[in-house]
Length: 150
Image (cartoon, helix red, strand yellow):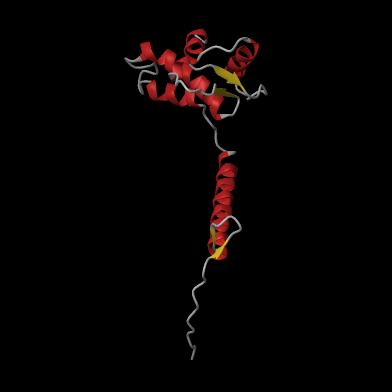
């Protein structure tokens, strides 16, 4: 027969800066973080076998009529949306970012696109846009790039 013993509760200890430190909670959190990273790695490995679409390609597919194979009634607006998707995709991939805002907040369309990394993405359209962003000095605003990329 198994006997049950009651555990004493672990009291949190104090860190040097006055914060509370609980080793078991810290271990649990780091174990959860490791599990999340492992799951993400598994997903990444699975995704390598699948075709990945850019944001622009996904939006274009959403805009296509299923039977006809061309864009639907909103095709007048889809062009600028797709150009915005190019900039967004470059941002997702860590190639560009918007300028930091100062004390005065600027509208997103009026913030400048700053180059972070000019390495090729492997996508022809993204690489071409990246090349233009790299060559343009001084940096242009989001609105200017959306107009320019047409």
